Image (cartoon, rainbow, N blue to C red; front, side, top):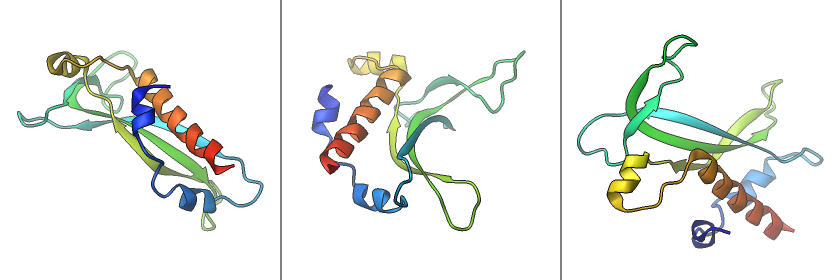
Length: 128
C-alpha cells in the first residue's frame, strides 16, 4: 500500500454516499480524467496535455492546463431513468516536468487511479 493511501484519512461523507444507494443496488464506482484549460505563470502544476474535446482522429490538439482525475459513485435518482455519477474524490495529476522540477517521483494516471481505488476499497472494507 502506498504512503499516500496511508496518510489520507477516511473519505469525508462516506456514510452519506452509501446512504444514497438503495438496498440491493451494486456499488459502482467510475473514474474519469478531465483537462482544465489554464495558463499563467502562477499556475504551478500546469502542463501540456492532449485536449480530447478539440482533437479528432486525424488531428491532435494539445493545450496548457491541469489534469484532474475524478472518482464518482453511480446512483439512481428518482427524476431520471438513467443513474447519475456523483463525484466524491478528485486528484490533481501533475505533469512529469512539474514533478521533476519539484524533485518528486512522477506518477502516471494509472498510478493515481490505483491509489484512489485502494483508498475507496479501504473505506469499504472498514464499513463491514
